Image 1 (tube, rainbow, N blue to C red):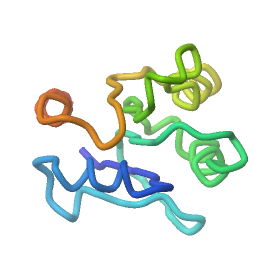
Image 2: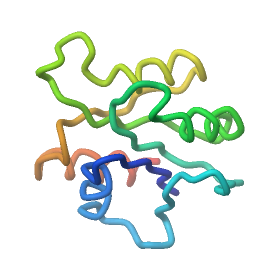
Image 3: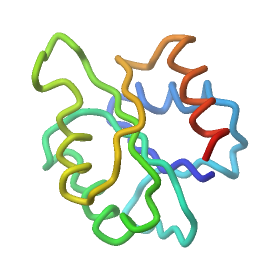
Image 4: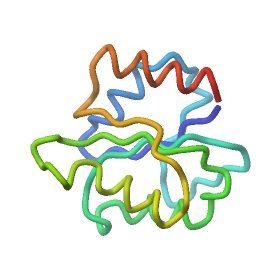
Length: 118
């Protein structure tokens, strides 16, 4: 399963590097990225304007997205992982997991299990 991720402050990038996946399975979202295979999206939580590349990517690739894994900060209460919630609602893609910052060992194990089952 491919992982498409976006990282603003490198928290998500650090999390992705902890996963049991090969470098060939991981792609960073950019304007030029095009995927023709199923993937799981891993994103941070920011305003839509900051994540515009993600929104544009999903507009073209949502049909191949198997789910969203979101990073956030629980101190923001109801705004926790709101970017993933908005993308999920817009593109009808499930949120598979969420974690804070760059994740704990338990978060990494849980996401590895999700990746192995997809």
